[in-house]
Image (tube, rainbow, N blue to C red; front, top):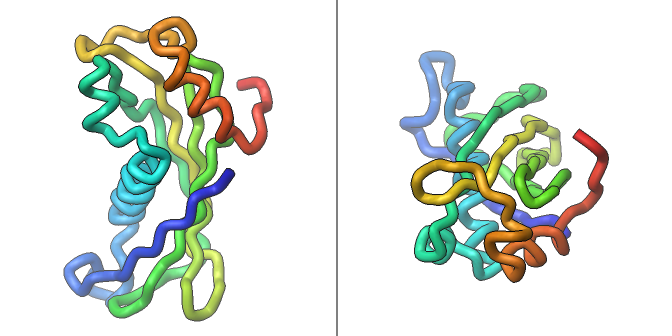
Length: 142
């Protein structure tokens, strides 16, 4: 199941050329992920209350087209992979007006306790694990 997040582009996010600076797309991915967790009733605050964190292990993205101040991007987020210990989140960003793909990317995560020790969410909190597992779009081996 995918999640759609809309985000207007602010002037301060653009560079000297008037386009969104490439580093901001990483923030947009995090904003979409945070909104998605809220939407599935598993906000960061609830995870942290249950001694769970989801640090980022890696980020990859391919920039396809630029956007500028005043544009709005649509981010389609989905879970590509989940095994209880690791999770990969996929992002497809489009310019709302033109429909052009702005960026495709992924973030890779693991699950840890508050001491940043890796955990298997299937053993640590089965209910939360089931919630993530039910959202996987595809589950290829990693």
